[in-house]
Amino acid sequence: MTSMQGVQLSSPGHYRLRSDLAVPEPGPGEVRIKVAAAGICGTDVHICSGDPSMDALIAPPVTLGHEFCGHIDKLGDGVDEAKCPLGAYVSAEMHEICGECPACRNRAYHACATARIRGINLDGAFAEFVVVSAGNVVRLPKDLPVKVAAILDPLGNAVHTTMKVPVQQQKVAVIGFGPIGAMCGEIAAFEGAERIYVVDVADKALARARAWIIRRELTDRVTVVDGRDKPVQTIVDRTHGGVDVALEISGHPVGINNAIQMTRPAGHVVNLGLPKGDSVAIEGFSKNFIFKGLTMHAVIGREMFRTWEQMLDLLQRGLDVSHLVTAELPLTEFRTGVERFGQGLEQKVVLYPNGRG
Image (tube, rainbow, N blue to C red; front, side, top):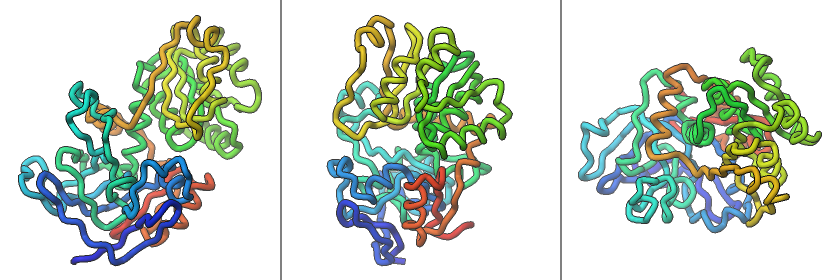
C-alpha cells in the first residue's frame, strides 16, 4: 500500500478528502500508527472555515486531525519494540516538543516555546495512517472504547483544567458548556466537587446541561445558570461570596470577566478558553482581581505525561464521557461532520478512517 485517504488542507479554509496521499514512513525515533478513530475538534472547525486567527499556526498543505487512537503499525530506526510493540493499542501526545527551551528544561513540556502540532502544522490523523515520535506514544487499556480513546486529547485538556487545583468539596463554576466544558463538569462531579454552577448563553448548551444533570442525577449538586441573566450576582448570592474555583472555557471577554468576578477572595480562576482578539480588558482590575488576592492559571494542552496518567486513572475508576460522542462517521463524511459540529448540532464527532472494527 503506497497511498491512502486523508483530509488535506491546501490553503486557509480550503480542504478536501484525498485518496492519493502517500502513506507516511516513520523516520528514526518515530512510529507509524494505523488510525482506528479520530475526533473533530473546535480548532478543526476554525481551520476549515478559514478563520484568520489560525493563519499563523497552520502550515498547508497539511493533513488535519489531532485527536485519535489506533494501533502501532511500523517502527522507525532506533525505536525499542519493548516500549512500542507492533499492534499495540495507543494514542499520542500530538505536540512535538524541542526538549531544549526553558520550559522543556524545567519539564513543563506542554508549554514548549517552539512546539509543533500534528494535524495543524505537521501531518495529522484524519487519515488511514499517522506518524508520531515514539516518545509521544501513550499505551491504552484494551477495554477502553475506541470512540472514547479518539477524544482523549480534549479530555486531557479538561482534566488539566479541572485538576489544576483540587476541586474536592469545593464550589466550582464552569463557564462555557461546549464539549470541553461538559467534560470539565463530568470531572468536577466525579472528583467530588461540593457544588457546580454551569454557565452558558446558548439555549442548546443550557438544554444539554440540564439533560446531563437529570441523566446523572445531579440535581442536588449542579445548578445551570443562564449567562444572559446576571450570572455573577446569581452565583455570588447563592454561594454567599463566590465560588472557590472558576473554570473559564468560553474564551469570551464577558466570560473571562464573569469568572473573575464570581470567584471568592483568595480563590482560583483557571483559563483554558481562547479569545478571538489579541487582548481582553479586565473590568475593575484592582477591585475584582488584585484586592481579592485571586490566583489566575493558564492552561495549555496536557502536561506530558502527568495529565495522561490522571486521565487514564479517572477512566479506569469509572469516569464516563462516552455520551459526549453524538455522531460517528466514516472519514468520507468529514465535511458533514465538521459542519454539524461547527453548528453545535453535535457534541463530539468521531471519524473512522479505516472503517469501524
